[in-house]
Length: 424
Length: 76
View 1: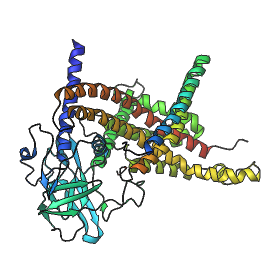
View 2: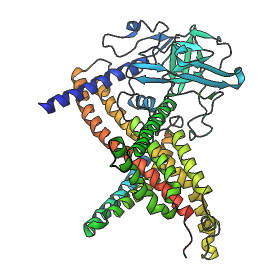
View 3: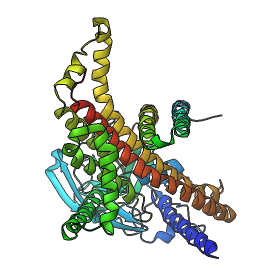
């Protein structure tokens, strides 16, 4: 009986996820400016929009890949379930009078439209949670109602007064490596990821503050509650990571290693909590890049004489080995932080994508190719997706801990190599 | 007609390589733990570390193939 109840509860989860997603792909593209009377564009099956704006149909088949990518991306709204919480947008546009600050609610993304706005504000629109800039200077400044957005491949067009205006596409001059694009404006917004990061940092601060207080108040007595939980992890990092790799330098670098470990672990777990926005902070290349750069700087600034001489002089090797060894060592210097960055990013992103693809099974199985609904397909998909998602989330829970541990242990091993005293 | 990118074959190959490597590490670690159960702590830590190195190489291949396939997707 208890098992039956449990499975019922989990099926409800799948149904909620399904309701959430349902909204999504129906609403991505098809926004009429009268998008509030939503019913107009929803067919009897309730899934496919049949709106025509600017002479183009906004009809798109469900695409599991695009859907997953949309959900792991950073956004200017924080979506919890069907609700979108507006966030502050801070843009610096050198060509259009500098700094602009407003809440993302000016785009009128509504509460149940998953971050696609009905309005343009100062030639900016929001599409699927992402800010887009309309480059055409003939587009009116200020806040205006728009008819909707048309997607052609990666390009987004805004339909206003029966005319299509292209939005600035992200250039790939950086090859996508530094976050996929250079634009004509700088975005300093407090996005979903930034808000998650601030929340997790505050949470960690209060957790450790109360644990630290407990050590003061309960001096000499056995740890209790939260203090106990944190002590296990702190001593694990000290005894299994810091001391074996850093030796007598362990206490010097322990605070740094603990910071890295708990920051990554906290954000990994935060992104794992269902129905809490599923923010993908440690699965964002920019975040992991900054973490890797910090590890790189700390390693190299604390590197001693032996570290640098081994790097550039490779003592004790014949000259023809030096020709090969020194370039390899110098390349290794940069490959180490690069792999730190990619490992964390790819592990967390892959986990999120797999879960989203499993949820997408519901729609892949539930929609016939002609657009009609296949109810047994939905039911089967919901059950299958629930089981697979549960399995995947369990694995992700392990990955959250393992990746935080691996990042810390690798940083410790690089630090250990940089600070080691010579013993030839 | 088949539609798709040949990059996915590259992704598959990269994953096969990493899977073989990590599988080997796991097998050898099990073997060493069976031989010397008292060293289980050291073996486990080193096993994870080595697996992480292999994973790093595989992930570079994966990310590069991902970038080749969709240059704009990795956007933050």
